[in-house]
Length: 228
Image 1 (cartoon, rainbow, N blue to C red):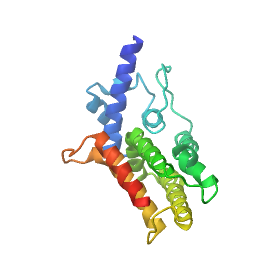
Image 2 (image 1 turned 120 degrees about the vertical axis):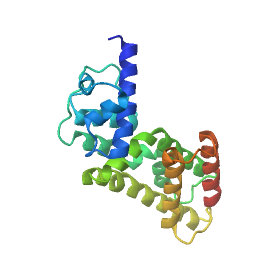
Image 3 (image 1 turned 90 degrees about the vertical axis):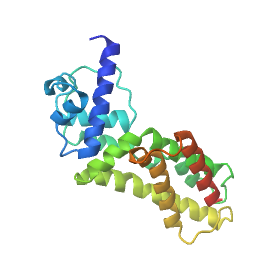
Image 4 (image 1 turned 180 degrees about the vertical axis):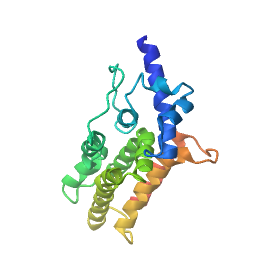
């Protein structure tokens, strides 16, 4: 099969499998469901992947890690047990997901610059938006996959909220940031606001009231003004 056509078919497979995994969850999703969503015979999918584990691993790499696989040998093999979770543990870390925030916390407590806050918020928003399908996929799978829940919520979100809380407290103590009643609540508010507008808004059944660029600009400005 020509490379261009192969890439197109894999893209179609990724789109169909994302819809099924996100709507049904990892455990309830079946290869027959994905074939139906893709509009092909069930056996066709096995030309590309060995099974559901290989397909999910490929989808996670494409959507949560944004890895370009080039032209892989087909069918893609089933990963070793635990390989998908281990891959996510290595990649979904504070240093990888929010490097500007992690770097700011390593600096002196009173070093926060005015333009540092929008840079941090922008990075968080853009990373969430770029991985919106992957994060949706992980959150849905975490409902009935405890190990996946631990990787995402305890491995990434909890450290992110903790780091943001520490960053806000340092800025407030240095007289650079607006005081708040609870830095923990403020940090969680930032994380969840970004998550809804960058990720979950795209699954809202109501028509979109504004384009993506307007949402991005508006949320970055509002959250920056809230902090400063």
